[in-house]
Amino acid sequence: MKPASGASRMTLRPSSARSMYAQWPLYAMIVPGAILLIIYHYLPMLGFVMAFQNFKPTLGFFDSKWVGLDNFVYIMNLPNIYQVIWNTFYISIMKVVAGQVFPILVALLLNEIRINIVKRSIQTLIYLPHFLSWIILGGILIEILSPSRGIVNQIIQAFGYNPVFFLGNADIFPYVLVVSDLWKEFGFSTIVYLAALTSINPHLYEAAVVDGASRMRQIWHITLPGMTPVIVLVATLSLGNILSAGFDQVFNLYNSSVYETGDIIDTLVYRMGIEQVKYSLATAIGLFKSVIGFLLIAISYSLAYRFANYRIF
Image 1: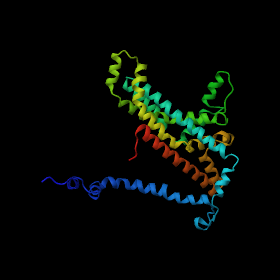
Image 2: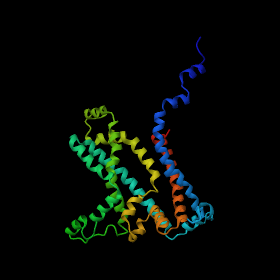
Image 3: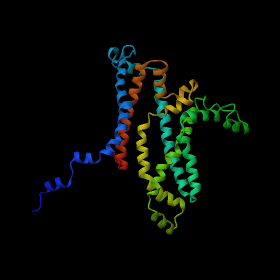
Image 4: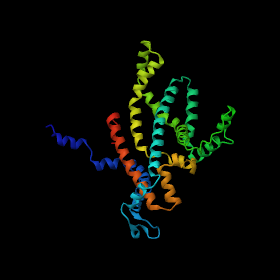
């Protein structure tokens, strides 16, 4: 007799416990990372209670005075808070846009290089800054952009112009952040788009050549449409980083003369929490950023699922 469909499914599908036992080495590999994640990301979240207290280190979490939403009201009444929020959004959006457009152009140009050794050499050179910390790159930029001895200002003076204090001019500083971040990251970002180019069917290019299409026509009608799903995916997922304008970079390059346009949420939290020892206010600002960031990440993943069919599970 033919077994019932339910019985058939039960005999063919192993139980969850049996499957987990068979794959226990894979689960064991997750354990160290999960422990680090819990210790350094989840346990510190208990400190968010400071945002609702007048926290005193000598009293601790349990004995510090509870003040409710007073800290949030206070930070919303700070004279520069809205400027700091605007700076964060403005710098982040410029970084996201530049970080999308430029790597795509570079990937398209690299894809046109037919000599492999030249292509590999260029890729290696543009990847290198990604692996350097902002402490190193910050020192390099300070020397390069120095108004007295920097090579950039020496070139400017050679053309008869006055030197520019790039890191001390509030009007120029946000664009220095964007350009320097692009210099550091665009090479590594091209990896995603170069991988997307390899998935395009080469027969499409052969058919286009037969039809007499130029290289520009091939890029416009074959290459870019083939890259569109990856472009949409990366663009939507980058929305979750709108409130992360790059603390490491800004902290190593900014100074008090550019606070007006260069101060961001993360640097404000640092100054309040570390320099001014206002733990409760710094925590309140950090919690505000985390909540908004969580909402942006949720929106970005929903957009990625809708437009690029990207799913976490």
